[in-house]
Amino acid sequence: MSDTIFALSSGAAPAGIGVVRISGPRALRAAEALSGRLPEARKAALRTLRSGEGDVLDRALVLRFDGPQTATGEDLVELHLHGGRAVVAAVEAELGAMDGLRRAEPGEFTRRALLNGRIDLTEAEGLADLLEAETETARRAAIETSGGSVRRLTEGWTSELVGLSAQVEAELDHGDEEDVATGKGDEVAAQCVLLADTIAAALNVPEVERIRDGVQVVLAGPPNAGKSTLLNRMVEREVAIVSPIAGTTRDRIEAAVQREGIAFVFSDTAGIADATDDPIETIGIERAREAVASADIVIWMDDADVPQEIFEKGLAVVARCDVADRPEMPERLRVSGVTGEGVAELWQALGERAKTLTPRLDGPLLNRRQRALLRKAEGTLRSASSAVDPLLLAEELRVARQALDRITGRADIEAVLDGVFSRFCIGK
Ligand SMILES: Nc1nc2c(ncn2[C@@H]2O[C@H](COP(=O)(O)OP(=O)(O)OP(=O)(O)O)[C@@H](O)[C@H]2O)c(=O)[nH]1
Ligand SMILES: [Mg+2]
Image (cartoon, helix red, strand yellow):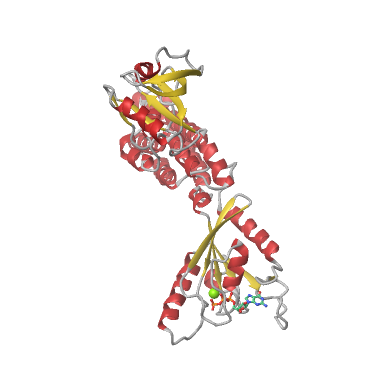
């Protein structure tokens, strides 16, 4: 990794300031070529940047960080330029012409941080989440993970595993010496089960992706129930056409909205009618059924009972409650998309359900990749606990440990890097 890389790490030009980062063995020399004598490490200084021919490129704030105690683990320089397109382009062109320097690939600064042991894979994933975070909950979850919460959790389990392996190895080495051998196997087996249970408990919460992807709420009910009207009211904009004609909505209409830091995705669907001659409406009804099946929460706007198969996720309401002669259903919320009555209560009910569908921020925040590996570790620990032969037991423990090492990137790092770093932008 002898290349020195550079990239614009702030937002696209034009902007007030454009921060160009340079990282690698030639970072200091490259910056010096532009600015003359560099400031002391970690002290900002104003410098005039010049091209090789002596033309002034910009006056910029220069910051220098000496490796390995830097974000990338390498020598690192930041040039805080005026953020105009031509300014940034001129400085980048000058850097690109220098020997051993090239533009960074997406996520390459973070990739170097990882390879140099400045962060582990879970922290890199947390950083990617932080850059993508669109809600307050997503930001807080990403801060936790990028700050090392998953790393610490996994490292704790890894060291328990290492302890267990050591006991088994001791038994293997000194199996015939009485003082070590007695009853050790059972004790290790019991500890394997305990650890498997601990991991299972951490897996028994919703995956962290739910926070990012949002809670899926589907509005369902017969034609003219007021689904589209209620959707427009909930998301506070006119996303769906409303009309007194039954069968107005045909396609599935989605609208995302944030509420108290949680992302919700609402889907308005075609009214579910038993029979229709209209082939397009028929397709719409089919889509509505699919939407209901895959929803997290279904706002049920039909006076009939919530069907058994979606009972758990159904949230039944008396729709159009402002209209006279609506049925008394004391156990249901009464809502009106037209007057707004009951909408606050509906939000409250949605918020409470959303809490059970998204992981708690003070608990383990595990993504799909990490969960799959943890499930593997858990399963291996369970089969380890029933292994009779200490040799087999030792091998199972090794496999479980490898699964944990893959979570933090200590094993098989190359296999996952591209997947993780494809989410990053250039300059990060
Ligand atoms: N009084 C009253 N009228 C409503 C309410 N909600 C909807 N309506 C009226 O009922 C008619 C149908 O409303 P929509 O929101 O289009 O109903 P929908 O369920 O989306 O109907 P489809 O798309 O055909 O399935 C319109 O004329 C609305 O103005 C309500 O809460 N109160
Ligand atoms: Mg509609």
